[in-house]
Image (cartoon, rainbow, N blue to C red):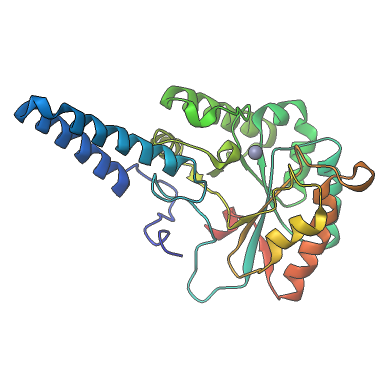
Length: 275
Ligand SMILES: [Zn+2]
């Protein structure tokens, strides 16, 4: 659980730069000072700044990184409690797939967290409300799921995220508490935006790659080998790859995964319930 101990559990959080951002600021100040003192050393100063930006970009392209700010990659450890896993389902709601996912979850009395896309929530508001009425939580996966999300500036990120907050609030009457970036990709502008909107970033422990791989056995193995206390697992009801007979791969994997969770005496919980 390293990196999560400092995570605020209360209702509000204030932004503070991560150690990597402090180090980046120091590199810029140092490069400027070196330029003033020895102008002919400009290639070295420029190289340091370029290398620093390459490092920041790399941290943003690594979804499970905690270098740009707090990021749930596992459920936090609560004193004396254990035995929980979180199944998270992204990119919906989807009018074909999501109702079948809800039935599979209900059959096994399991709760899940749905990271929904604001535009899709607006198109399928009744289905969004049904997700909530069945006991699941809906969280923010941006308004449009833009593929260039990680290239947006603070204004663009704020628009994408706050519009999805509004779409989900209008549909369900409840405001999300977590955000997941499209494809998990981000940049240093994200964390201050999330802090202002009182959102926590969540990625995952393992993902099935079920938007690109229609082989249910392979997707299942990626998620469940090994299945451990505190895992956050990622599947997709939106953009699901299609396996045999055009069946969305999540529908082949989810029952097996829930059976594995039960056989290990683990409880499927929502992220919000682990706050
Ligand atoms: Zn997504």
